[in-house]
Image 1 (tube, rainbow, N blue to C red):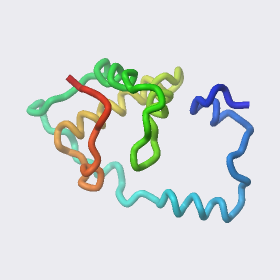
Image 2 (cartoon, rainbow, N blue to C red):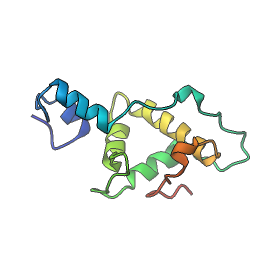
Image 3 (cartoon, one colour):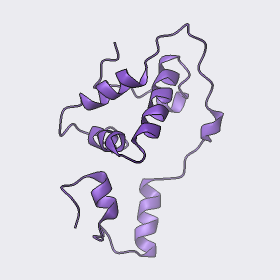
Length: 125
């Protein structure tokens, strides 16, 4: 049984939200098509001419998300990000990756397909 709705608890649970079937797989593929770009194509952040944040600031911002905050257009809720950050095994690596992504966006290196969405819900400075 899942532990109080945490992402890790749901992943470890034997509960199944849908019966595995070709129809379920097709429905998921329609909702979540493959990405249109390769992540290695992201531009590198420019030297320190832009505002940047460190892991401590990103951690503080993520932990400041109000409980029950709504998700964005992709359905990812702030609680999902918080759960990943708090994961004992992967949390530190996730925080480093998230900080690198935030700094990439702050440096203006965000891919145009993502640029139309804004980082809302956290004050970086």
